[in-house]
Amino acid sequence: MQVIIPISVIALFLSIIASYNKRSYGLEFCFLIVTLIQSIHYNVGSDYMVYYYNFLDFLSGNYSFNELFDEDVIKYNEYGWGVLQWLFGKLFGKNGFFVLVAVLSIVQNLIYYFFIKSHVDRRWWALSVFIYLFTPSFYLLGYSGLRQWFVLSISVVVFMLIENRQYLLAILLVIVGSSIHTSAWVVLLYIILAIIPFKSGKFFGLFYPLLFLLLFLNTNIVESFFGVLFSNDTFEIYSIYQDTQQGSMRSYGLGFILNMVPFLVSCIFLYKSTYNRNRHLLVMISCLGTLVIPFGTMAPLVSRISHYFTILSLSSLPMMYKWIKFPYIRFLCIIILIAISVTEYILFFTQGIFHTSYSDYHTIFSVV
Image (spheres, rainbow, N blue to C red):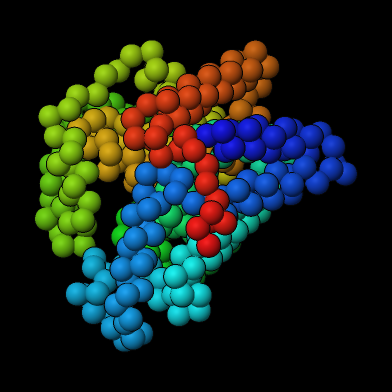
């Protein structure tokens, strides 16, 4: 915490400079420093040591490449992660895990850097970087949820592929991603939405709020759906998130209302803005992350799945807020977004297991 927060603030300041100075390399330095501290971190995040010890156990098995595809060695068909562990273990031994984390951090941050630079107006880079760094489920996830964070970056590449109608390559990438983290299959929804032959966003501008209202009033439908989903062996691993949340209730107050503002702006954008396939597709996909909010009793699982959609808000939110014609409304929307993000960011560092696991920053040089 004493390192991640100051570095994130400095990175945000660099992105602000880059937003207003075309000769500045602020965005490049921004991603350079956040990539550096993420690449060399050790025992930061609630799951980091679990991954580390699993890697050592895997390494002690001394498996051959063919054995990686044995269900007794790699469970839930997540063979891609097994191959990565095997490769880096063979090349670097016990230090292979640290090299693997560094490589993943570099690749992921490069993807987000190019995505922001190519999909966000320069004057809005700072807002995009703010969302990236100060939304707990984005940059901070890379310190702990190593597999899913890597697959999230893959989903961004999938979106860029379907923008150019490279569907077969996108499907192949989804298959690769699902071999690392099974939940990546949900990214197929990107492709489904992309191939729907629509010429206007008006339908989704009306359909999304109606669907949200339906799900909000009938959360039992969702619980039934996940009950059926968990009966499938492929997704059995995620049933633990269902069990840990059973019987809990979700409250809906001022925070819930404020969190709905980006969703409402998205629906208005889809309905009223001039149609553009890629822009509307971007918003349509990112909106799906909000549609899962009513799934109250499934919160832990649904939160993980929603990341695959909300990650595109790095581009969709700056684009939509730029589109708002009235300066005061635009300013209010941005203030609400910043207030929500900062509040969640503070709570992330001060409550629960995340307070303990993120409170101290260590580097790999303390153990290598």
